[in-house]
Picture 1 (cartoon, rainbow, N blue to C red):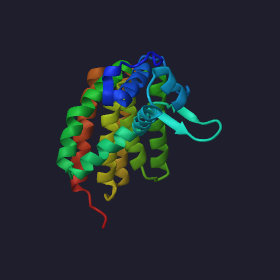
Picture 2 (cartoon, one colour; picture 1 turned 60 degrees about the vertical axis):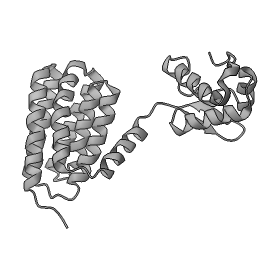
Picture 3 (cartoon, rainbow, N blue to C red; picture 1 turned 180 degrees about the vertical axis):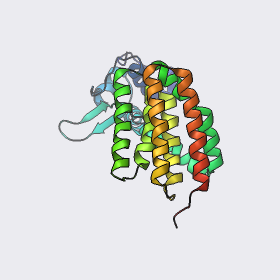
Picture 4 (cartoon, rainbow, N blue to C red; picture 1 turned 30 degrees about the vertical axis):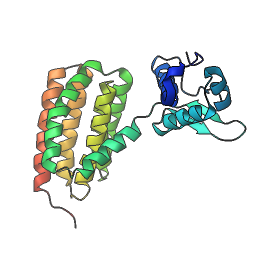
Length: 238
């Protein structure tokens, strides 16, 4: 795996090849989260390359979040738990810099969220369903206590995406949720609107629990259209 010597023909691509081997080993499950990679010196010796090449490879892997380099006596390069949050934040920032409008955001949500809900109904496991239904219960409690439902609202859509067990969709939906949260941060949302949103969420959760993919799709489509239509009419705080 990692110990096989590198061909001399790589020239300046040695560090890239080392990083590629580590990535492949992670993808194939040969390296697990928490596992420690060989030290720079040991890896360089095994592969018959310079420590500089190994150091550069480890640095590039750390930059994309695949490994964490710890200092000290118990330090070293460790495989991290895969976390899509950095990717989500990067995508959200890219969309913000593009000055995404409410109309563009609505178009994206209309195209994506109903399909995500359909797939969620087909793939949701018991643990995902429990998290989704627990959030709906928290929304109900928040309404009774006259609390702010914004954080629950977008979290619901994130959990629907989680039910798909499809990482690219989860990353994209998390980014859209971030943008949607930003879009409604300056909007006054009434108790009646919150109740209306909760009804949609409860119906979507029921459809997903029952495995009714077409109902989940249609209810989510109606929900996105309804919410965006209401947002346009609500007053914006200064």
